[in-house]
Structures are given as structure tokens and as C-alpha cells.
Length: 367
Image (cartoon, rainbow, N blue to C red):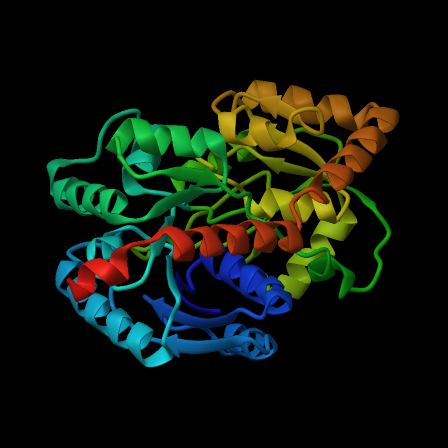
């Protein structure tokens, strides 16, 4: 089976695409991964080359959530159709929305990883400004023209359906992370330390709340992530010890050192960073979001991400209770093994086969 898959190299979608592609190898699935947006780094390209059933094609077309992207989005659509024809793709797997509205001759699924409207509502408690109306219209059209919509959690799928009211059939397939990402690093002694990660300038990550919450705690608290906002401003923190952006290897090493991983996000459709922390054996303190409860209920402490005092109480409680800390560490690691690339790939292959067997796109194209 041949799959044309789209991605970008900006964040979690890249990691998801590589994890899925590698796991699809045992199903004899060949993946042509077409990226848009900023080009993959040398390190990202090297990781892609390690996956034998994956071929990479890169472009710099704007992504649909960027400002004024639509001319580029349309050009990217023509490019993707040419790639699908050249590859002889059996299925088109879009990790985005707009391109599902194109006249594809093969079945199309679109995977919802996030969206501007749900992000804006979570962070600002309101709809985006009028300038995003075209985005909403294009996303709605793509969702309605796809053969299947996939989301990584039921809670996020419910949000998406409330926002766009698509008529397309849906499915939930959890994202995944291979435990090998943290096994490649040397073992580290677990430290009395708190760790967080995320772009410091992103309001959805609530890093400023966390900076207030960790002030005065007996353990050091560290945060990894970009400190320079898109407008060039440098974001400063006072109580948190800022590590800047880390490589995957260095991130894994920190996760294996820290006893607690805290994630006070206001918006999180899935949370690969949480999964990585759980695989590394961290106890989890997470935002009380429906998506995170769906995945980690019984294996984490949940807090109001907007309440610095509540976050501080949760962290202090774990610091002062070693038995509970150990229990939550083991519970998180055990839960994380539900979300494996093999389970994810099995679900996608079953969906691919179902869509190929039932799709009438080719017949419509001939007619």
C-alpha cells in the first residue's frame, strides 16, 4: 500500500508522522511524506532517512493557519496532487484540513491535530477576529469533503464537531510515542526537580502561571522551550530556570532526571510532551482539561491551569509525599504503554483498508 501523507516540521505533527510511518513498515506501507511550512532541520532530515519505508518531499508553502496563506495553500494543493499521481498513492492522509476539499481520485482522511478556532476559544474565551473567517470556511469545506475525520482524543473530536458541524464519518485514534526516544539516552539518577516544556511565549502553555506557582518551592523547577516570540520579543521568567530549546536527546535526558513533569496548558488536543514525560517515568501534574483527563485519568494529578496557587499546592503535595510521587510515576509509565506506535499503526491500516474498499472516488472521477 502507498500513502501520501502531509506534515509540517514545526511541532508535534512531525513527530507523529515519523512515529506512524516507522510503525507502518511492518504492514508493508510505503509513505511519501510531503511537508509544507519551514523546511525540516538537518537533524529532522536525518531522522527521516532512518525510516526505510519513508520518502521525504519538502516545500515551503505557507501552512493554512499562517497569516494570508491561501495562494500558497492552493499552490500546495496542486503540488500534492502531482505527488499523489507520481507515487501512485492508494490513499491520501492529510494532517490538515483545506486540501481535503480538492478533487482527489483516491480516498482521503484528514487528521485533526489542532485548529485556530478551538485554540482561540481555549486561550481567549472568544472566537477569532473576522480575518479568520476564510480559515473557518476552508476548514469546514475540507472536513465535509474528506472520507473520514480522525482526531487523537474523543474530547477534541467533540470540540471540532461543535465548531464546524461536519457531516463526514469520524474516528478516534490516539497518537503515540515509541519508548525508544528516551532509551537512547544514558540512565540518569532521578533528581528532586520539576520540569516543564513549551514555547514560553505561547499563551496556551501558561508558563507565566507556572513561573508564579513554583516560586518558593523547595525543589528547583526548569522549563525548556523557545524564549523568543514571533515578534522578536524575549520572554523572561524569574522563578523558573530556563533551559531554552533542547534537542530530542537533551529533552529525553531531562525527563529521565526530573521527578515531576508539570503541564499547565490551557489547550491540548493530545499532548505528546506529556506522553514522553510519562514514558520517562515522571509523575504528572496536568491541566484539568477533558482531553488530558481522557488519556491520563487515574495516572496524574489535575489542576486548574489558571490558578497558580492550585498548581503550587499540587506540586508541594507531591514533593512532601514520596510514596504518592512514586505511585504516580509508575502509574503514568504504565498508562503510557497503551499509546504505542504499533497500536496506532494497526488502527490506521484498518482505516486505510476500509476506505480503499468502500470509497467510490475513482468511479466518480471516471464518470
